[in-house]
Image 1: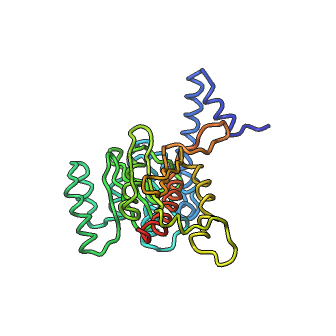
Image 2: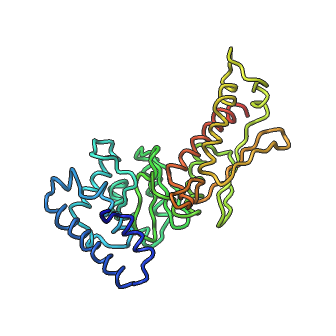
Image 3: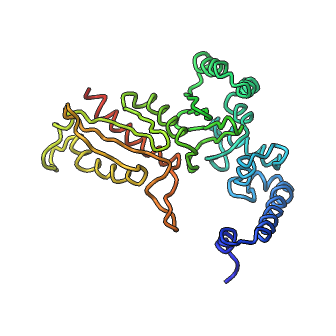
Length: 317
């Protein structure tokens, strides 16, 4: 059997000789540097159309590792930034730049061109009011359509259905967040808070520090009384169609991503659905460890909440 990735990972996990591990990592680093700075950058057409690493993930390795722009293959990074900008402008791109990392100043340049230097300076000096003035001016006077929320170390920005997170202390941002893991409970709560304000403002949101985020939504008693006692094929209503055929499937799907789901009847006979969401899902990897919650997982939870809120709460209250 030839040497494969599992052998290397197992060696790094189990080997007690730190010198041997250091040599192996050094070999890996040498290979990565040669790939990035020589093989890929040498041919700009290839670098643009078919980079040597999938979706330029080695840029993410360097950016998240705290390296500066001088430590990156500059042409590759410029192409990467250009792809993010073209996708933002709804232009044709070779690939959709989901989970694309940019330095903070470049993030501001792509999404807030014209104000990016001021925004970068205000972040450095923590002048949040000045940042909000710029954002509000762009929304109110320049017809730009986005929403934002500052929480802890994160500036959460939402353009339509695309979510971007600026990590303020680290000086980088993730654009079009999708498959990446959600970094902290504070960030999870912030995203929930922003979505609640936009799409389901009367849903109760509770932040249980170091545990989970708790979301409580209600199905009014008036809706419950519209559900037939037995499923019917003829003249089935929209309420029956959903609650007899789809509701339980939706809840079952959500059990993959929620710590816990509780159903209660409150004092007014409304049905309360309480979702407990943490940084870990109920899905497992091959060694039996829980998988982290990703941005796309949270989006599935929001889709359920929005459907219940818009179809079976707002119209009935």
